[in-house]
Image 1 (cartoon, helix red, strand yellow):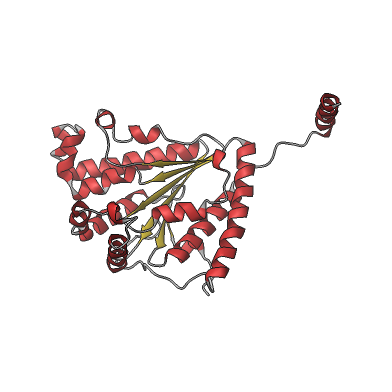
Image 2: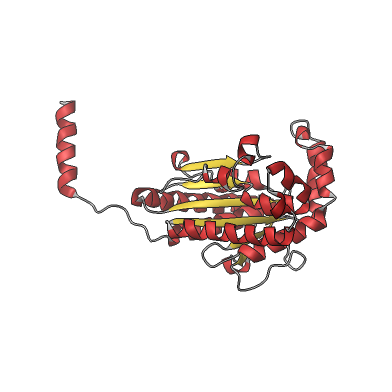
Length: 291
């Protein structure tokens, strides 16, 4: 059984990220399914306790980004890793194709709308990185987003400036007390193929796949290059990327749970100072009401 070492998966700008040199499978952190479930339950409890403290402190928050190719396990990871977190302090925002209203604003506008409050965890299922991933693979779609021609005509500059805008956005959030945690679920093309076939054979999941998804799959190499460029341009000390080996979904979830627990428990938060005098006063008031 492999020992958890978070630095193995962390990219903060000190070393370059390469898709071909980064494994999609590592030795599991668990012995069997029972051991995995036990570990997840323990980590889930620790996360809930740490998040409860963050909520009471009211000065910090978490923005957790999940980015991946199709069928890499975003939904299942969110469902299993955060299962024990208080739902009133936990929000999920899923982003699909932008609407006409979205495209009438700047490329980060719709994501600003979904940022969490202090004391809470906000999950982005797909993120603003789509604006430098899918659009970089399909730059012809920029015109649909009302991007002025003067920028479309200078694509290398446009991508560089968007990376800079994203990095500044994340730095801004950090300086306001919001930790930005970025997960890229790194799955192999072969494993993705197996999952897509299994999805097509499942009556309840077949609807998730269409010809358009397979057209996107033909651009796999371009997407891997786009991910490399985006990660290397935006991996910083305050907003690092965590590239998670995702060919083993069970291990993927454990790794994410370990990282989330470590980050939550590292926040400089405390419960408000205990006031015994005020507690006694309120207890007497309750007792008087009940009497």
